[in-house]
Amino acid sequence: MTEYGPRPVDRRLPTEEARDLMTLVRELAEREIRPTAAEEEDAGRFPRDTFRLLSESGLLSLPYDEEFGGGGQPYEVYLQVVEELAAARLTVGLGVSVHTLACHALAGYGTKEQRAEHLPAMLGGGLLGAYCLSEPSSGSDAASLTTRAEREDGGDWTLSGTKAWTTHGGVADFYTVLARTGGSGAHGITAFLVPGDADGLSAAAPERKMGMKGSPTAQLHFDGVRVPDARRIGDEGQGFAIALSALDSGRLGIAACAVGVAQAALDEALSYTAERRQFGRPLVDFQGLRFMLADMATQIEAGRALYLTAARLRDAGLPFSKEAAMAKLFCTDTAMRVTTDAVQLLGGYGYTLDFPVERYMREAKVLQIVEGTNQIQRMVIARHLAGPEGR
Image 1 (cartoon, one colour):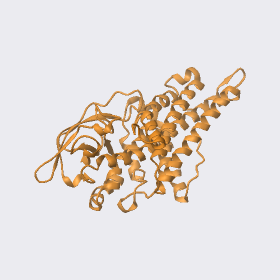
Image 2 (image 1 turned 45 degrees about the vertical axis):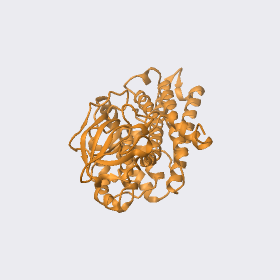
Image 3 (image 1 turned 60 degrees about the horizontal axis):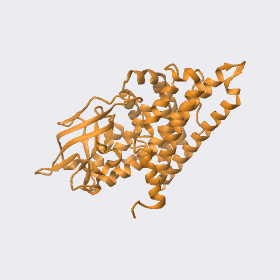
Image 4 (image 1 turned 180 degrees about the vertical axis):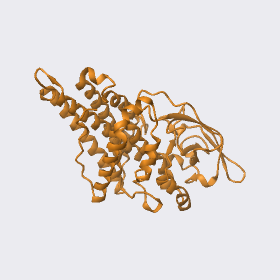
């Protein structure tokens, strides 16, 4: 990172409280996250202490009701916090989004008793969550999952199967797990809240990834894991609807992360081209490079506007599934373009570990895949526009 550092984004926040919150987030990111991000990612170290600090600071609970320990903030504000954290280190920003996703089922579909018992610790008690939907043979086709939950005498459930691509797999304190309790298809799936230390639950070695090496992604094995019926979330067979609801919101988290990574790459490119001189003048004075920077900034602002539009629809209680898919698609494609251009602007230095843009480019790629690939997003958008295929 150059001495110039990141440029604060001129944000339009709805309240003075939100503006104070954003100041806190920026200060925390600059003091606690950004300085060691490159070293920690290179070493593959998971920043568990950072997540404890975020929990203590109320930053793991922002979009949830204050009644159960939430921050009571609208998604419009929460997502901009995620963006700021992702700009400092994607492992942290995406981790907050995943934790929020893991809390969604209980917060939105749990009984009042369940929420009172579990949510305070999940939101502000230092716990970290994960979300278990994908499996080795059912990624995009999530409705075909095979992890099974069998009802026992006395009402408890026994979970058996394998989940894949679980962010925070092996380090989370709780997992929201989707398992099959009925027949085939989407209507036979139920959601459960599973403790991270449950007997019979184990994690495989983390996947070896091209980016986000500090964020563990692992398979989880459920070998007869007993779960009380009191930890079933929603009705039997309602799990897939709960999962889709969570994914609509989760896609906005990924969109915000993507804008954060793209903004960080643009900041680095601007700093470098202002410092670096060729042919007697700074690189930033060359029109061809200025046009690249202008395009990068325009794409970032467009992505930010798109995810905020979707967030405001959500906050207003209006349908936002199409807009969430659009935001996830556009913002993550933008992050890939912007980070690639940032590497190009830095030339040979952009390809080295001495500058963070090569890391940003590697990290941007995964954002086009998680929370539904961008091909799936196009299917979702088209379905809203033209109806389902095969009518």
